[in-house]
Image (cartoon, rainbow, N blue to C red; front, side, top):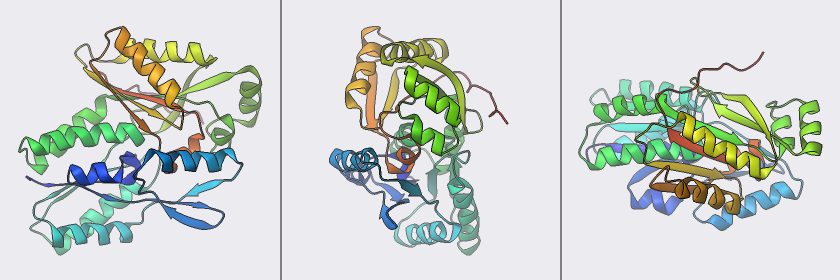
Length: 295
């Protein structure tokens, strides 16, 4: 391998999949009933169990990876593996995890000056982060260097679009993504907010639609409007709603918009804030949408 490829567990890949592709990862934590759990799932059933807990009314909280914890992880990789490190972190617009990874990388490189650690702010999460990780894996397997890969990933990140279609407004309200009034009215009328991850990696309300059928049509139209003409694949994230994810996949394929669609779960770190039923669509475009959160 030309370098060590790494991520945090917000890439939402099964543990065994990461191992198969020789991708290292550091797991993040969430807390339910004052008990801390680690996000290192290895089966779809574990994701279903997590959303079952949320549906039962229990609350989940998340924690971010500290610079100290991440530095320990990087140093362990350096001691056990050869080569530089490309680490893809959860969006800095959603958490301090990326900033802390960059601080940790700087600290560890001072201790091991002959090694390089490229701690990359993905400006993405869940299946968007996985998309970037898959690009990195392909470059690594082609023999590209860590530096070449890091530079190319920065270009991909600036082109990556995330459209998020929320169903459970309670969790968005709790996280401050929608107001209590919007959550109440939206729940009664079946209005679903449409959220994007902007050019800074932040979640930003973008639009709204009413009903599941119109929301899926909106997703397809968003792809048509913002995707690159030569794009061949899209990734779909779902918070325990495989039926809707599969329906969206079929719509994209039936219109010959892409050749490949990957579907994956939204894991517990992001799922804590979106709640069950959320769907995300990720694809490459020309440039990310530049829009700042409303103050």
